[in-house]
Image 1 (cartoon, rainbow, N blue to C red):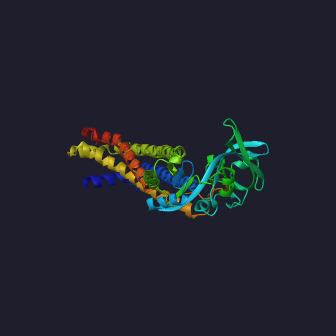
Image 2 (cartoon, rainbow, N blue to C red):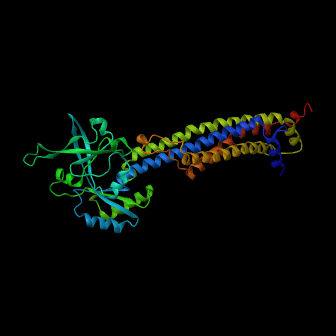
Length: 402
């Protein structure tokens, strides 16, 4: 009881509720915590947007059968029986190719999937120009092709497939077909935008797989976007289908890129936490001032028999209260600003660049908990030196001039 009363008494100032140094300590911590909450929430929002972009292109699970899918209906039936959380599955075909226009030629990844499939629906909102509807001899290119080839919607391009010459093992026999550009798609990742080209399945099989018309594999969508659900589905399918299939989840297909994004989030946390560290120096200086001003009180308490540990705890708790008040205000202010970013129309970004018209915000409880733990630990550590300074004071020293 005495300890709590002393903390409250020292926390106040005779001429006001909170001293100036205490006010700036609380203010600094609140601003640092608020900045961390907003930054982590915005980064979480952008990470979710990137994840959705990858999933739109690959599905949650990406399955390829070596040599092409031999019995598509049977494979789809097996997958449906194996995965209870399966929502959609879309057959696709792909092949390396060359694209040529106006004397320029580049390597490409040719892909074909039905335009009325679920995969096509997930991509329709990513069209930068045109619609995701393909007729015969039409192609949809990644957005980066527009600059690479200097082409626009409606222009003609040539797609070239190189095949082994049946009469000679040392020669290639190119297959060439003209296509009209139906539109451009922005898949949210430059690697995709500079390589992808979508053509109708019928044209793909005529150009690439004339002999069998088999699909290359399936893209699967589950009822959850969680990475763990996709990884579990991959393990289950691998055991069920065997070694003839290459099965990957959406995260492992883009592990380097997605891991780099997560590292950037950790770096941002570290950089912005310096603001809280700087504010805690103010807490420490505030306590040093409190100790110097309370020499007389400390001496009286020591002469009455209170222990050094008791004195140290009084000033440590005082510093912790400063940190907790700043932490609470910072979290509340950060959450309020996150909510305002979501609901107010003022925070807009160019949709033609980012494919979203607002700043994505997603608050994670884990991030809030990490901020709380970090702030309390740093605040407590900043109180130790001034608190020990007060605890080590000799009782006679403070009463010398009384």
